[in-house]
Length: 56
Figure (cartoon, helix red, strand yellow):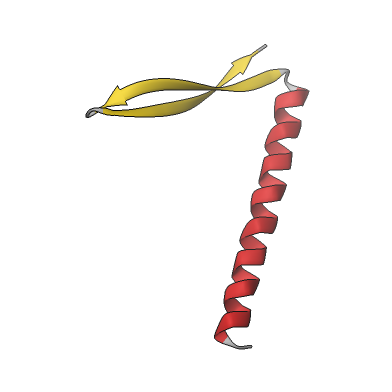
């Protein structure tokens, strides 16, 4: 396996795992009737957001 092939394999695996994770999170949110909400806050002059799980 070349370096380029190895890099492509790692990227493909990361994409596969991220997709599976997103699908599992979506299923859990649906099962428990919840949503994800981004709550903005200012930290050291920067606007950030914290993601929270909330019941519908």
